[in-house]
Length: 199
Image 1 (cartoon, rainbow, N blue to C red):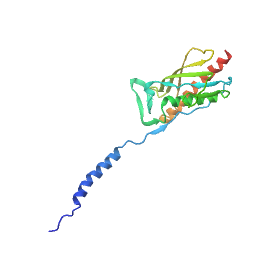
Image 2 (cartoon, rainbow, N blue to C red):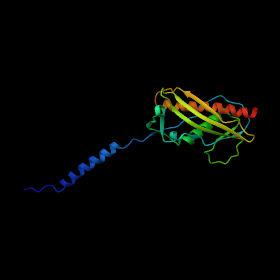
Image 3 (cartoon, rainbow, N blue to C red):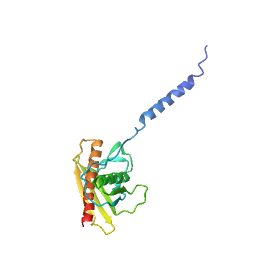
Image 4 (tube, helix red, strand yellow):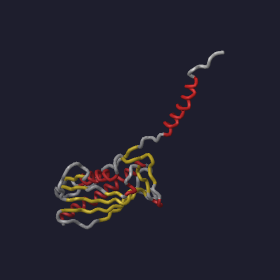
């Protein structure tokens, strides 16, 4: 009689282990796709050479997460499961809003509070974002409030609402619409900053 091959039990044990490892690898979540808002061009506003500081933008807690919020309509929070922001929403909106304002107020110096610099601003901009997602019709809605603080005071806080039709019905279209809406907010804030000087 021939003896059984001594390595056969090892191979029998390795087979299920390798199969389990393959299944685990197949079940692993794919890496998220990262996105960012971007500054958009807007009308140039004539204003003095102020140093303008954009304070850290406050965003509603439901927006303050890595996965991009598609909609909060109908009492349901819908997320893009594998499409994430490349940075925290608050600092990202602060950075992009500062860039939007800088292009609209070229005579001034516009800085986001998130930079590692200590400045004494002539004007501080404070913004609260209450909604920044699509409604039930697929239109991007931005609801915000802002205030301007200057050495000689400033106007009372002001609300701002706008809606933008995304150019495409996917996450890229929504991010483009969000960037456009933030640019519109910058248009309004730039006009209010110019009015401070005229007042």
